[in-house]
Length: 163
Image (cartoon, rainbow, N blue to C red):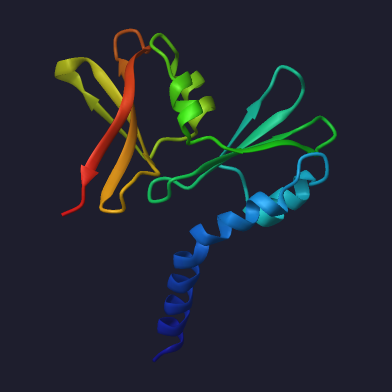
Protein backbone atom coordinates (compact mmCIF):
# COMPACT_ATOMS: atom_id res chain seq x y z
CA UNK A 1 0.00 0.00 0.00
CA UNK A 2 1.45 3.38 -1.02
CA UNK A 3 1.80 6.36 1.30
CA UNK A 4 -1.17 8.11 -0.34
CA UNK A 5 -3.35 5.01 -0.09
CA UNK A 6 -2.52 4.74 3.63
CA UNK A 7 -3.36 8.44 4.14
CA UNK A 8 -6.63 8.03 2.22
CA UNK A 9 -7.55 4.97 4.29
CA UNK A 10 -6.75 6.83 7.52
CA UNK A 11 -8.83 9.84 6.46
CA UNK A 12 -11.74 7.57 5.54
CA UNK A 13 -11.57 5.96 9.00
CA UNK A 14 -11.56 9.37 10.71
CA UNK A 15 -14.54 10.59 8.65
CA UNK A 16 -16.46 7.41 9.48
CA UNK A 17 -15.99 8.04 13.21
CA UNK A 18 -16.79 11.78 13.18
CA UNK A 19 -20.53 11.46 13.82
CA UNK A 20 -19.70 9.49 16.96
CA UNK A 21 -17.52 12.39 18.11
CA UNK A 22 -20.62 14.54 18.39
CA UNK A 23 -21.66 12.61 21.49
CA UNK A 24 -18.60 13.93 23.30
CA UNK A 25 -19.39 17.50 22.25
CA UNK A 26 -22.44 17.55 24.48
CA UNK A 27 -20.20 16.77 27.44
CA UNK A 28 -17.21 18.92 26.42
CA UNK A 29 -19.00 22.19 25.66
CA UNK A 30 -20.43 23.66 28.82
CA UNK A 31 -22.39 26.92 29.02
CA UNK A 32 -20.78 29.38 31.41
CA UNK A 33 -17.40 27.63 31.19
CA UNK A 34 -16.27 26.85 27.62
CA UNK A 35 -14.61 29.68 25.69
CA UNK A 36 -14.92 30.58 22.00
CA UNK A 37 -11.33 29.42 21.44
CA UNK A 38 -12.12 26.04 22.99
CA UNK A 39 -15.21 25.68 20.78
CA UNK A 40 -13.12 26.49 17.70
CA UNK A 41 -10.48 23.94 18.76
CA UNK A 42 -13.07 21.19 19.28
CA UNK A 43 -15.44 21.93 16.40
CA UNK A 44 -13.43 23.95 13.88
CA UNK A 45 -14.57 27.06 12.07
CA UNK A 46 -18.32 27.67 12.18
CA UNK A 47 -20.22 27.34 8.93
CA UNK A 48 -22.03 30.59 9.63
CA UNK A 49 -22.12 33.29 12.30
CA UNK A 50 -25.31 35.00 13.42
CA UNK A 51 -25.08 38.35 15.22
CA UNK A 52 -27.74 38.64 17.92
CA UNK A 53 -29.42 41.85 19.15
CA UNK A 54 -28.10 41.36 22.69
CA UNK A 55 -24.45 41.48 21.56
CA UNK A 56 -23.99 37.72 21.55
CA UNK A 57 -22.99 35.64 18.51
CA UNK A 58 -24.32 32.23 17.47
CA UNK A 59 -22.09 29.88 15.51
CA UNK A 60 -23.64 27.26 13.23
CA UNK A 61 -22.08 23.79 12.92
CA UNK A 62 -24.14 21.69 10.54
CA UNK A 63 -23.54 17.99 9.90
CA UNK A 64 -25.60 18.13 6.68
CA UNK A 65 -25.86 16.70 4.09
CA UNK A 66 -25.05 13.22 5.43
CA UNK A 67 -25.37 13.83 9.16
CA UNK A 68 -28.60 14.44 11.05
CA UNK A 69 -27.53 17.21 13.44
CA UNK A 70 -26.94 20.94 13.43
CA UNK A 71 -25.36 22.54 16.47
CA UNK A 72 -25.84 26.18 17.39
CA UNK A 73 -23.32 27.57 19.87
CA UNK A 74 -24.17 30.97 21.35
CA UNK A 75 -21.33 33.04 22.78
CA UNK A 76 -21.85 36.01 25.04
CA UNK A 77 -20.00 39.31 24.52
CA UNK A 78 -17.32 37.88 26.87
CA UNK A 79 -16.77 35.02 24.32
CA UNK A 80 -18.01 32.36 26.78
CA UNK A 81 -20.64 29.82 25.68
CA UNK A 82 -24.08 30.75 26.94
CA UNK A 83 -26.00 28.10 24.98
CA UNK A 84 -25.18 24.88 23.11
CA UNK A 85 -27.99 23.08 21.31
CA UNK A 86 -28.70 20.55 18.60
CA UNK A 87 -31.47 22.30 16.66
CA UNK A 88 -32.70 19.55 14.34
CA UNK A 89 -35.40 18.37 16.72
CA UNK A 90 -39.19 18.29 17.02
CA UNK A 91 -39.35 21.53 19.03
CA UNK A 92 -37.55 23.42 16.25
CA UNK A 93 -39.62 21.81 13.50
CA UNK A 94 -42.79 22.96 15.29
CA UNK A 95 -41.48 26.56 15.23
CA UNK A 96 -41.14 26.54 11.41
CA UNK A 97 -44.38 28.30 10.51
CA UNK A 98 -46.18 29.66 7.49
CA UNK A 99 -45.11 33.22 6.70
CA UNK A 100 -41.54 32.99 8.05
CA UNK A 101 -38.65 34.36 5.97
CA UNK A 102 -35.68 32.33 4.70
CA UNK A 103 -33.27 34.02 7.15
CA UNK A 104 -35.46 33.04 10.10
CA UNK A 105 -35.59 29.41 8.95
CA UNK A 106 -31.80 29.33 8.46
CA UNK A 107 -31.41 30.76 11.95
CA UNK A 108 -33.80 28.16 13.35
CA UNK A 109 -32.54 24.98 11.60
CA UNK A 110 -29.16 25.81 10.08
CA UNK A 111 -28.02 25.30 6.52
CA UNK A 112 -30.16 22.73 4.68
CA UNK A 113 -28.70 19.64 3.07
CA UNK A 114 -30.37 20.47 -0.21
CA UNK A 115 -32.29 23.28 -1.89
CA UNK A 116 -34.46 22.61 -4.92
CA UNK A 117 -36.59 25.02 -6.93
CA UNK A 118 -39.78 23.98 -8.70
CA UNK A 119 -40.59 26.83 -11.07
CA UNK A 120 -43.93 25.34 -12.17
CA UNK A 121 -45.13 25.26 -8.53
CA UNK A 122 -43.43 28.55 -7.60
CA UNK A 123 -41.76 26.70 -4.73
CA UNK A 124 -38.27 26.53 -3.30
CA UNK A 125 -37.83 23.52 -1.02
CA UNK A 126 -35.18 23.36 1.69
CA UNK A 127 -34.47 19.87 3.01
CA UNK A 128 -32.60 18.59 6.08
CA UNK A 129 -31.78 14.95 6.75
CA UNK A 130 -32.97 14.23 10.30
CA UNK A 131 -33.11 11.39 12.80
CA UNK A 132 -35.90 8.92 12.18
CA UNK A 133 -37.15 5.50 13.07
CA UNK A 134 -36.99 2.66 12.21
CA UNK A 135 -33.49 2.23 10.86
CA UNK A 136 -34.63 1.18 7.38
CA UNK A 137 -36.04 4.65 6.73
CA UNK A 138 -34.45 7.97 5.86
CA UNK A 139 -36.29 10.91 7.37
CA UNK A 140 -36.20 14.49 6.12
CA UNK A 141 -37.64 17.79 7.23
CA UNK A 142 -38.77 20.06 4.38
CA UNK A 143 -39.66 23.73 4.32
CA UNK A 144 -41.51 25.03 1.25
CA UNK A 145 -41.09 28.69 0.30
CA UNK A 146 -43.26 30.61 -2.14
CA UNK A 147 -40.73 31.92 -4.71
CA UNK A 148 -42.82 35.04 -5.39
CA UNK A 149 -42.89 36.18 -1.73
CA UNK A 150 -39.92 34.31 -0.24
CA UNK A 151 -42.12 33.23 2.69
CA UNK A 152 -42.81 29.77 4.08
CA UNK A 153 -45.90 28.09 2.58
CA UNK A 154 -45.69 24.88 4.60
CA UNK A 155 -43.27 22.57 6.38
CA UNK A 156 -43.22 18.90 7.33
CA UNK A 157 -41.43 15.59 7.51
CA UNK A 158 -40.87 13.22 4.63
CA UNK A 159 -39.93 9.55 5.06
CA UNK A 160 -38.17 7.45 2.46
CA UNK A 161 -37.92 3.68 2.95
CA UNK A 162 -34.47 2.35 2.10
CA UNK A 163 -34.44 -0.22 -0.68
